[in-house]
Image (spheres, helix red, strand yellow):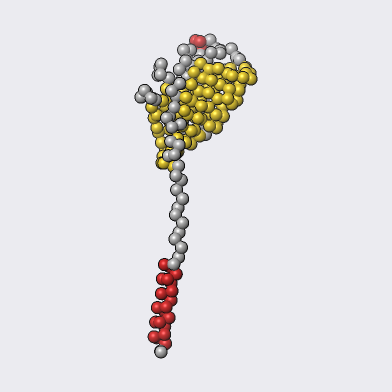
Length: 204
């Protein structure tokens, strides 16, 4: 056998061996899919309705994830607007994250929660700061058992636990209340800035 023929035979053998090894290679593992992830939305805006068809809340944020099995929604850095049905006012709320229940009737705000109420009859609003807050949209109530700071005009109240009647714009501090009150300026000179922490609370 001359060198040319021998080279061809060796080359053919190498190709055959390579093909055999390629066909015998193990199948790559199937990529894992999170069965809970129904879908993800980025840069979203969503409006959820109550049972009667009225608006329960509107929310915007950078990321929304839907859990298929639990039928719940997780939001990252959401900005909520809860309507005040007796008027045109809104309760604005934000947090680091949020969880929305299957029927959109329960919203759990988690981490760095800030909630600002609509202007009261005197034009003032109230601001709540806490680490977690649950909003029940059908009942129009907000609750927490965590430490909370309430800013109203120039006055600051601190307590443990809070119950808010969002429709009546009233709130109750549940325990360990510590308050610092300052006199309010005369009504004629009161000019609240947009988004300033002033408001309609049962305590002035």
